[in-house]
Every structure is written in C-alpha cells, then in structure tokens.
Length: 134
Image (cartoon, rainbow, N blue to C red; front, top):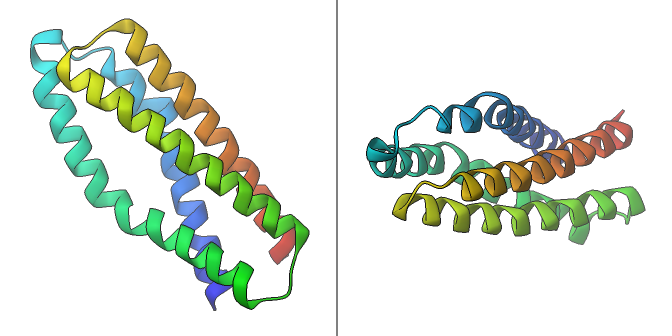
C-alpha cells in the first residue's frame, strides 16, 4: 500500500510540475510589475497549501521504503533524484523571495531554468517508479 500511495503522490507532483512549467510560470510574464509583489505573495501561499503535504509525504514515504523494504538500486536512484528535486525547490524558493521584492526578467528566467530541471528530475523519477512497480 505504501508503494501505491508513494507512486500516486509522485505522479500527482509530476503532473503539477508540468502544469507549472507550461502554464503557470510563463503567465508570470504577463503580470505587471506594480501588481507582481501581491500576485507573488498570493501565488506562494496558495501553492504551498496545495503542495506541502504531498511533498512531505513523497519524501517520508521514500525514506520509509528505503529503510523497510528490500534494497532496490533503481529505487535508490529515484530517491537520489528526489533529493535533487528538494535542492532545486530550495533554489526556486529563493527566486520567489527575490521576485516578491522586485520582478526582474533575470530572476524569472532563473526560476524557469530551475523548474525545468526540477520537472526533468521528477519525470525521470516517475519513469523509474513505473519500471519498478510494473
């Protein structure tokens, strides 16, 4: 059951990540600078309320699977990718903090680059999970 829940949460986050990459972050370009601070604050609050539990559940369930189930090298690789997802998430958070102070194209571009990497890592991780659980 833990594997199924882990798989489902991971793929929920992958889908959300692709949505953010393809729709949500590109729309940041359309928000005028004078409205961006408020928009950015609302974005962070609403996004956090949506993703906080799934993010922590994914990480906790990955650790539990590694600790309590027979060692699967591919699952360890996917867990390493998850660790990199968390690192990139911290970098993205820093970009959001900068954007709350001042909207700049440089920070928006950096956020998109970071999120592209995060989306790639999550998608690769999801592919590994499909290979393991099928």
